Amino acid sequence: MMKGVERLPAPQRKPPARLSRGTLTREVIVEAALRVLDGGQVNGLTFARLGKELGASPTAVYRHFSSRGDILTAVADELIRIAIDGYQPSDSWQDSLRDLAYRAWRAFEQHSAAAMHTFYRVTLGPNEIRVVDAILEAIHQAGWRGQEAVFKYQMYSNLVLALSGRNAAMLAAADEAGVTPGSFWTQEYMPTNPAEFPYLWEHRDDLRLKDNFAVYQGQVEALLAAMRASLPAVS
Image: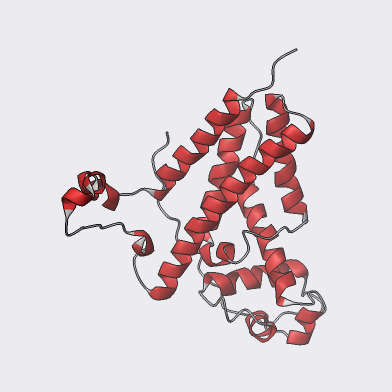
């Protein structure tokens, strides 16, 4: 397995500058929304706040998005774009699925607050279409077709989104609370009667140690192993 990766620093926020008339686009608004979320202002993601960030009237933002939910859905699709930017399928379907899984983890880690509020959304956007097709390409390469291919796709995508999204949520919560990342998942068990919980007591020191990315890699490998064990027969 690959070694754990260091958490990427949050991108530096750019000061808002007033836009020239007619230059406000959906893409520019999504970039601004991502900056607001990266700045830890999840609850502050409003049309007024976006207008201030963009140097534009909130009414101008409404011309492109009808609701905050629509903006978050667009941010979700932008995170997918960040994750798959530069992706190329491998000759090995397993390497392709590994690559896509690790890309999701890194993008969600870098934009943890945005990911926490968007990872569960179906965007139907161009980048989601790209990544769904890329996953299905790897699954077809392995030999699955029809409903079985879709089932394998759902197994894989649900695992990747759930685990990467959970990690993002923990990082965002730690940032908001001003504590060290991982503080919400520190297992320091010291039972008053160790003999009553012998297995926990035996592993008490190891439970304090964790590498979330290494665990994620292990979970991805376990899924790939299960998929390999159920490969369709070659006719």
